[in-house]
Length: 204
Image (cartoon, one colour):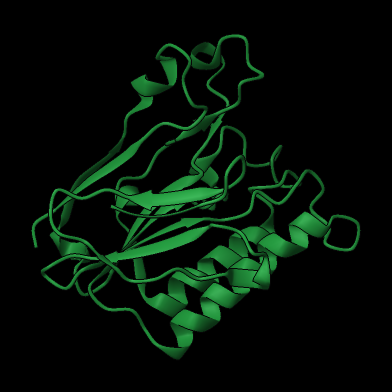
């Protein structure tokens, strides 16, 4: 296991049945937060786990510092990938952005809601392009969510979800990915997280 954590705040970890080398962690946007950790497997594949800042409630960096921090985090990540393209890598985590129209329950209603605003989507797409990442969970089209708010009395019936949790692979290994899915049922477990796990298998 490799991990970075802040008691009572942020934390990321990677668990492995195989030996896992600690490949470091980035402090993006100089926030001093535990939001990234990387681990390298014996076959040379590097796994990155990112917890992108949620960004607060107002999608305006002038009036909401947290939104600016979110955009800065993504900008720095884009620049890192552009400077040195990752290879044989997998990126996972709560990226706190639902980029596609079918990643949210109502595209038009959420265009001004943090997590689906055009500027966030643009920033996330820039990160993907810079690293030549492939969204392996999103090969099929259609509505797909990984997060449902606690505010809904019946989250399943309302089904007002968003796909905030992602699993990407660099293009050199993306073809080896299969069977990616969201374990929606976990959202209905006793005392659940508002996020459901996302899975994928790789033949490497």
